[in-house]
Length: 363
Image (tube, rainbow, N blue to C red):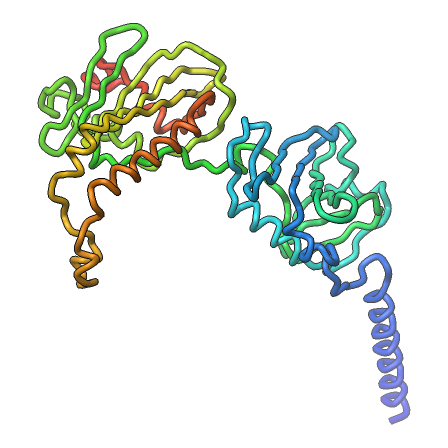
């Protein structure tokens, strides 16, 4: 009995010692849990932020976004709009992020978390610099993400203390990733004809034959791929951009003019550059043709077909639809003038086909 009592006492001592060690270790400065916001008070300052910078290794500027007249724009991309929703979401996430664990405060160990000073030529992290409103710019060095929890390791300002956050706040390093990629949207259903003129070689056109766009009025079966014309005709349907720059004045190697039933002429002049295809766009409106098109009887809107009422069954007056089209054309012209756009590879491939490509199926 005495031996059993001693064994139980010894076990109790071990358990008590272990519990005491765990409590001390849990509250050690190096890994204390914190319930505080990552940036106390920042959520109340978000609306005043008007400049966002992302710096990379060597403190190299990677991204610059500025708010002008309430809109986020990208000066390094000729003032093209940033993705307003993405910028707003990034600022919201930052304002809501919390510190969940203190990590190392030893600068020699920062590199393990990717939060070393970005002035280093081989720095792996990024630094966010947020300016605007009262107070100094907010600087956050963002490193790796926790492999299991997913939150970012960060340092605030020049403080040596690193923290693990409960959210991934790592910013995109590539400026094009922040762009509003919407360039043009003209449904194929409105398209009537495409005139294509290469700088060298024979000009040709794609026009409707039954339900397909075909080469020079031939049967679609005359082409290696009967659907190839439709692929090109879909070029203007929700066309995105991959990048944007000030127009360099480069000579186009192929020009396509998309003519619509309602009088639009959309010109796309494209050329290969830096392992991609760039293009400048232009748009014209034949108002007489547009007016004639809008004067035709229109099918009732889908809402009317679903029983939405008498008013919904009435198409907008021709004058209003023509005015709306003028407004759209003016907006496109403001966006297109003086700029060139990097086309996504799939759309570029469809645009740059030659006449022989359609006939023999080569690319």
